[in-house]
Image 1 (spheres, protein in one colour):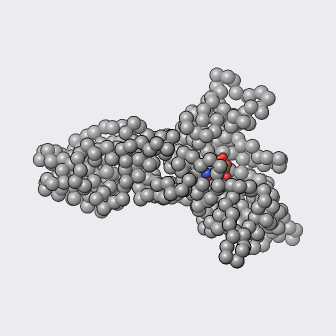
Image 2: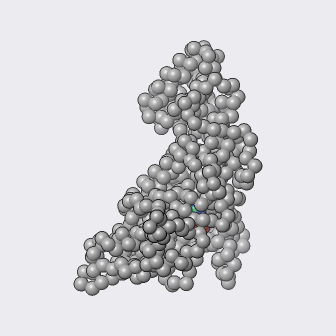
Image 3: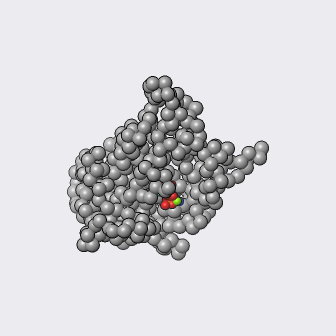
Length: 435
Ligand code: ATP
Ligand code: MG
């Protein structure tokens, strides 16, 4: 992509209304633009990152055996009356009526809808187990939308729903999602701590939240320091034994921690940090199947209400969490894998023919090799170009100046380490195309 043709409205000024670094950087780097309280447009660069995160989430859901579908954002109130949640949900639900005076709502979540869809199709034990998911916009009329997309009113969520014959099946589905979550967050370059979450009055339920540690997080956490020793590799190859090990370690939100009579973690190993909730998994059993009349035939001709779970990931919130975890004083530092482009190619002197032709040729070859490249071909000062590239945080910068071109070299800069290296254009290409 040529920057001269792109839409990248970066700003030098720190926006006055942004309180946390991720929100400031997202506005400054031209990733998002607020269009109403808690509602944002995703500008081209931000949209690319959002798609990359969505894709990693999707791949891990698919690997876990979940099946993707897409449910609408607008739902009917009648659906929610079947579960009894229409009145219970409260003012966070955005409600409206259509031209025929039918009551509608913008979905804050999809338990009712998926239960109805499954109910109308599933007949017998052969239709179980199944886990279905979608990645779709949600609306919650939050009292205090804040921190940009971190707590927005409209936000993108991955929500999965599992259907099992019995509690043992539900536990297996829950664990498959748990593993998928550990891998997803590890692939996104994040360390996410699984925290035991309260499950409400119904016994036998199981729930965990996943928190990215960050000073700006909205949740206060208490946990066993051993949770910090889990390695990236271990999370990437997580399995049932990883879950067993992790869930044995103490981790609670402050509110729940205070209710614990005796903390099982010795004081020297008890950490208290803040976290951003990026995911939440919940095994709730037959709550919706029972209230909405979902049952299937068993092998012996009887009938059973499927045991269900729901599993959310805040896809748009993850963007903020990644920036909170990965930035420096010059701007964002995208982990490979979510970066909007892999390489930023900087032409230091667009009016120098040798410089321009070296850049054009590098750009063509990078594109041909499938290396996503943002080519700064604008007529701008070098300093401004460097500042923009640092701000938007692409993993690699390839800097081409007239003096270097004369000597047959270009410069390759690693955004994370700041390390710079002079090498021939061919060697730089080889480095960047090798992965
Ligand atoms: P929170 O406690 O942050 O309000 P929640 O418990 O209401 O979250 P869930 O209903 O479990 O959230 O939704 C699943 C995921 O969706 C959350 O873990 C979070 O990552 C994300 N999410 C929830 N509310 C928002 C929001 N207002 N803006 C952005 N992401 C959100
Ligand atoms: Mg909430």
